[in-house]
Image (cartoon, rainbow, N blue to C red; front, side, top):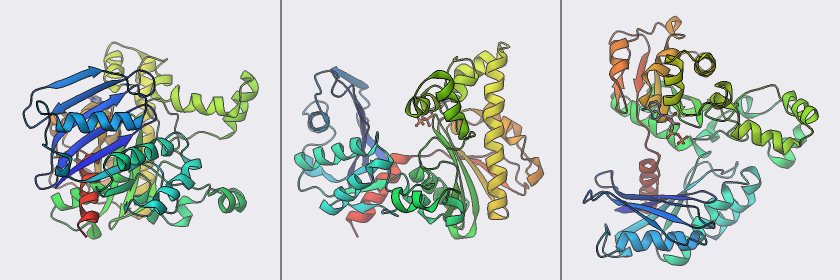
Length: 401
Ligand code: ADP
């Protein structure tokens, strides 16, 4: 079955068509600058004709979806002949609150429930909803599924998800830790078990999803028991431009000193912090940071060291949380491609009895690989994530149930 996977942001829309029989992505693209002017990039991967980039007015998400559907069915560039060849649509939804512990088929009640939890992700959920409504208007008979970034983490016990603040904030506003990147943590932990010839129920796994946004999760016997992101994706690791953990008193202190609002400080912690800030506003991209580091830039060096130190601390915490670990996985842009960053983290973990295969690590980019030696007490793996494929698989499973 062909599944259209939609990931809708406030001014962008990423899409892929995945053939679930082969797990192959057959077409993909991106609509950008929605509501501003508009650019659509489209690629038919069946004919490998290269990317087609068209500048055109995209006034809203409905127009974006209609352009996507036109591109997919176009007589010249299309990958399908008619929309009937799309069996279902899978939507990535950032926040499912406590309502959604797994993916669901979208109906009126689900739309209303996603709207209700929008307060928890005011930038993302409304954008995700516009994608659902636009698809429903243009493909009313095609089933649609919502796949939530938070759902996989709903198995966390209260001791892991509660903040030690007055109950009323949880009771009235549902303030607690939720975690994100759930589709990736779920996919990698399940697929790595399959790769090792085990069931997820047999393994204690730590997944390090290290991209521009980054999080670590502890997956004990197939269930997430802790993860580093919290109420929002700001908590936890040092990221591209996000600070990760800090003393919450910092917010008020900066606001007072600079005469700015808590909201403005929040924006700084989300968009102007992380390795970008530590490197002296050099870059949030690890390729730039390593280049500068090799040229002797001390701030770039500190950014990388602090980033790795934080990842290692979370790994250590999750070994404690699960009273052991069998596999540690690196995934996402940095985790899959940046062997030097992996090595920085890795060198803190010798106490676990890991024997690191330095050569294998240095040679591994974007592919499945075991980067610990065969006799190592704990396996360390590079395991590429594929959130779109995971969404397509969940969607297929639900619509064929
Ligand atoms: P997100 O989905 O959060 O935007 P990704 O998982 O795509 O992030 O990761 C993007 C980041 O991965 C880039 O900002 C860059 O730092 C890093 N990255 C990508 N490719 C490489 C590479 N070849 N070497 C080092 N870092 C890389």
